[in-house]
Length: 98
Length: 480
Image 1: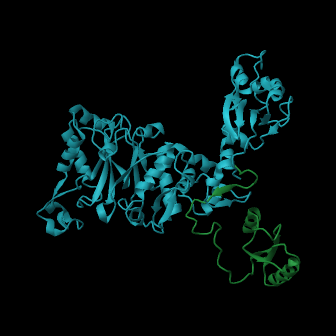
Image 2: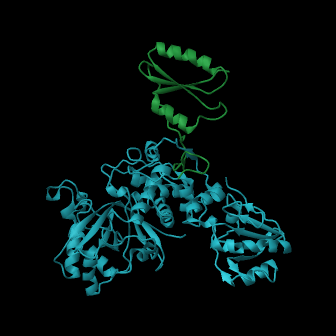
C-alpha cells in the first residue's frame, strides 16, 4: 500500500524517536584497500572535478570506486539512492565543491 | 495533505457519479432545476458526467468526504455557507421540496434508492482518511526505498519481536485509530524503561505492527495503562532475570464481541485477538519504552509467552464467577488484568470426583510453583478447565469456598521448607522452623475459568516477586 503520490512505502516511526530514523554509521575503516567506495556528488557545479581527483587517490590506494549523484543539491538524497549505495558500497564519501 | 472543509456556494448542490443508475436517471432533471435555483453539480467519477449540465469534478473527493456524503445522488441546500437541507437517492417528493420545482420528474417513479458514494468506498476509505485527517499523525514519517523489502526493513531497524511485523503505513494507523474515541496525542502512560510519554498514536502504530484489528486497540491501551503503573512495575518485570512477562487476562462481554478465545487451546496459538493484543503490548514496550532483550530485559530464559500471553475468561460458563468482578470490575464491564507471569503449567487429575479430592491434588501441584520450599513471595493464576469446573459446579461450591479450601491446603510447616530440609539447600530462613507458612499470600491465587470442553486438567501460571518488592496484578477497565 504505497502512499498517494509516492512510489516508495511510507511508514510511521514506532519508537520514542529519541534516535535518528536512519541507521547509525559504521566505524571508520582503517584502510580503503579492497573496499568499494561510493562517491556521492551532491550536484553542485564542478563537484565532479573535485571528485575525479578523489577517485584517482582512492584507486591508487586499492579501492574500487562507484560514482553517484544526487538529483539536486537542494534536497536530501532520495531513499532509493541511499538504498542503492548501501547495497553496492562498503563506505560512501559525500562531497561538494563550491 | 490534510485539507479543510471546502465552502459550498449558496443554493443547491447535487453530488453524483456516472456509475450510479439513479444518478443517470436524474441527469435529465438537472437543467430544469438550474432554471429555478442556483445549482452546482459535483461529479465523483467521470468529469464529463452529467452531459446535461456542466459539473465540478470532486476529483480528490474532498467535498464528498467533508460533507459526509454516503449516497449519490445527494442534494443539499446551502444558505450562508451552511447546509440547511439534504435528501439522498431519488424521492420525488423530497426533490420537489428541496428544489422548489413542483413538477419535477413527473415521469419518474416515486422513489429509487441511490448508490454508495465513492467517499465511503471501502477500497478508498483508508486513503481518504489519511488525505483529509492525516494531520493528526505526528509520528516521524519514514520513506523506505522502492527496492527495499518492507518486512526486512523493519527487521533491520530492530523494531520486531523476532516475527515479521505489519508495516505501519499512515493508512493502516489511521484505520487502527478508528478503534478508539481517544485523541491520537492523548498520553496513556509513561512507558518504561526509558520513561517516555506513551501516546495513543504510538500504541496504534505498534498495534498495526502486531497485527491487531482496530477493535482491539482499546484493549491494548488498557493493558498498557495497567502495565505502566508503579504497582505492576513493568520496568522490574523487564529487568528481572526471572522468565516472567505481562500475562493479560481479559474480562467482560467485549471479549466475545472482539472474538477472543476462552476455550480450546486458550493459552495457545490461532486466535488473532489473543495473539496480537499481547504482542502489541510487548512491541510497544520494546519500541516506545525501549525494553529490549539483552538490554534492560535480562531474563535468563524468558518464556514464549513474552511474544504474547493474553486470554479471556470463559465468563458465561464459569460456575464460580469471574476474576474481573473479584478484582472490582462491574458485571458486564470490560477490563484487563495484567499479571507478571511465566508460562502455564498443566495439573492433571483424572480421578478426583469431589472438590476436596481435586483441591488436594491442585494444592500438591501448586506447591511446587517457583520452588516447593519457597512461599508467600509469589502469586499465581489458577485456570480451572470446564471438566474440572464441573466438579465444583455439581457440588455447588462458590469461588470463596474453592479459594479458602485451597489456601488451607497450602499451609506449610516451617520445618519442611527451611534451608537444608529434605537435603535441599534452597528454602526459607531456619528461624521459621516452628512457623506455619502459607504458600500464597491472601489474594495471591487469581482464580479463572477457561479452556476447552474436554480434559480433566487445570493450569497454573506462576508469578514473580509480589508486592512492593516486585509486581502486583493490576486491573483496568476498557473504554472506547
